Image 1: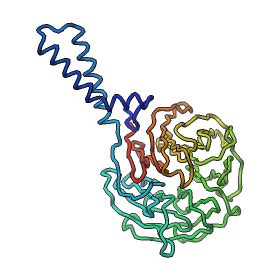
Image 2: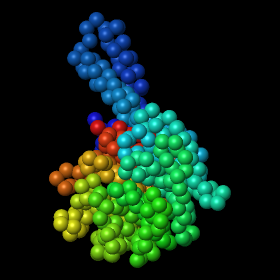
Image 3: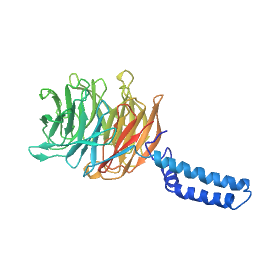
Image 4: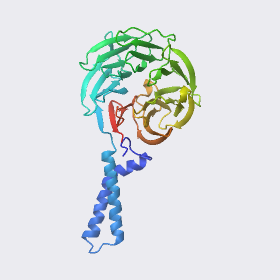
Amino acid sequence: MLTLLWSRNDFWIWLFLDLLSPVYLAWAYYLFHKNYRLKQSPTKGDRLRVGFWSVLGIIGALHWSFGGPRLVLSGHENSVISLAFSPDGRFLASGSLDHTVKVWNAVTGKNLRTLTLEDSGRKEAAEAVAFSPDGKILAAGGRKIVSLWDTESWTLRNSFRREGTNVIESLIFFPSGELLVANGSDGSAVWEVHTGQRVPVKEKYLGSVAALSPDGKLLAAVPSGYGAVRVWNTDNWQRLFLLRTSVSSVVFSLAFSPDGRILAGGDGHNNLALWMTPDQQYVPNVLNKVGCGANVVSLAFSPNGKWLAALARRASGLEGISKPGCVRLFRLQDNKFTFMSWQTEPAGSGLAFSPDSKTLATPYSGTIKLWRID
């Protein structure tokens, strides 16, 4: 059973069913009392009416009980804008506009640590968070600073500085864990994680929105306000080619599938573009309307490759963080994505699947909701 969202197809039908389930059960009890207690021999129609309203009420009650989030994590004082699970699934990190990074027990929902991102004593919003592939480091990026914490002691290991004044929009560890890439709308930076040394990159600006292929050989990135995806060779940082959606629109989000065969991109016209990658020849394949908002600001593939989650809202940037939108869940089968469900009115940014693909974390203003994916 899919317990991520309100409904499988129609949110409003399930909403009324859930909210009115006590009324249905009360009416069924009334009919039962009227027809079975006061009548000596209830008719077939009486039995059918009691059965119908009883079943409707039970379905609504069960959906209300099991169709909601598995956990709701509360504690941030402002919108959550970035999420990441640790590779072992024990921790969930959340970055917020309240200038903190919170670390949660992903099983119990307990807040384990609250970390602060600071640049020369000035606190910064945690725009991006990421765990290293071995889970030993948690990184968080703000405007100019990227801080790295040890996940055993939660002490600060190092801090890297980036030129530019705009926020860091994506933070990515290479599969080896040796390199870390930070991208913002006014510049990119690559560091050696253990030494803190900058890695020379010919292009100062790779892109603000970025995704790294699972083997670490390709970096897909989009400059701020740009409608085409640049794909870079990470061995020499040469640009290989451009990918475009079928509409002229800004691309706000990118994600590679776990096997590297698909690159997904969300744009500002409510579209989800999918590029298939046989022999690294990227071909536009599918274009789906996400719904619930004009801008597809976050994308995440499940580690098992079966699901793609997309978060859309009506405005991008910081001014759109508090705007309502939706999360849509698509299922991948035979290289085709099928729309499955949606959750309405998430406020914030960021999506994250647990390593076992059974939990999806979504933002909701200052809280995080953990949904069970079966």
